[in-house]
Length: 443
Image 1 (cartoon, rainbow, N blue to C red):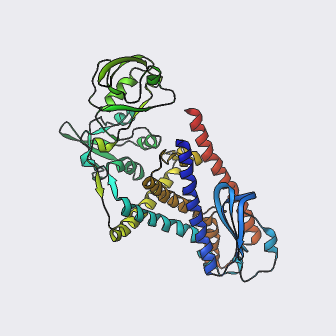
Image 2 (cartoon, one colour):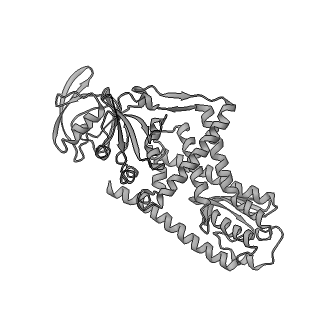
Image 3 (tube, rainbow, N blue to C red):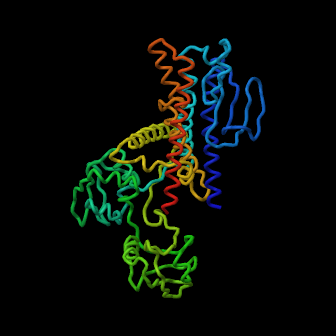
């Protein structure tokens, strides 16, 4: 059921984004009296799920959920319709319009995606406000792994600043280090202030999920809410609702101490000290090869920390949502830049449809859904404006060339450029989804 909910959220989000993007092209085409022959959600290769015609435009739903399209008369696009281009130019065709009009038609989709993201952020801030964990409220300090320890961090350190700049939202510390290539972290340890230098190889490790800086939490209460698919604890007789109070009669103050003890006893028998209906029980369990019990608990930050919520009135939410939108765009551009860095090797983290679908939660949460949809709208806009033939940015690149030089590329050149662009896009699609498959095989 969890997978189905994720798929449904992904498809709904994708549908909204595609419709809005193509609507941008459609409206701008109509503004300049350009004929739109088709408007499709998803691709209709060989056949469509349904279609109908209103006026000069055929509207439909394709079966291949890789995006969507509008087919604008007199334009070389992914359909590679050569026959139409052999006919005399008509005044209602794309190729008959002035270069600045064609430029606005091609950027309409990207512009609408940016506007959609801003509107969603305004709506979300007005409806739910903004809740976060202030760095000063992380009272137990941080926890990290061996990668974090290798640069000098210790569990229990309290983050004071990064490059001597205070970060209000604790959950933004790791992204800030990655995106802004920070050089140092200032921490408080046992009443002393220390300066931890960040080595060059730390950021590539962060991108692979190592060395993450998390808030340290107390161990208890740890009540089992569910088990993993292959759970040593469940096989040993543990049940949902059992509370783990120790291991091998050892008590733990912090959750990371519990995890470290398990890691030191991989594939070994440990005695789980539990409470079941107020009765203390001791159950022997053989841990997995990874040092896991296969148990989960509904633990959340609001159990241990004072979170801060900022509420916005309607008029307050407008500038706040726009500001958040522009900040998200800036952060994503920084992330995008990392992909092309050989040092960070961020390209190894590229993902396809499985990765995108997995970011949606297993239970339907409208606040999370709309935040993710806004972020994906920004991704779609940025990706589409890249100067790659077959994308909007490719068309914009050739149009800018025409505006600057006064020379229009030939239809034959644009046709070949479209083919090259499609090959590049399919290669990227295969690479990203291949990464997904490899990650699944390695699990």
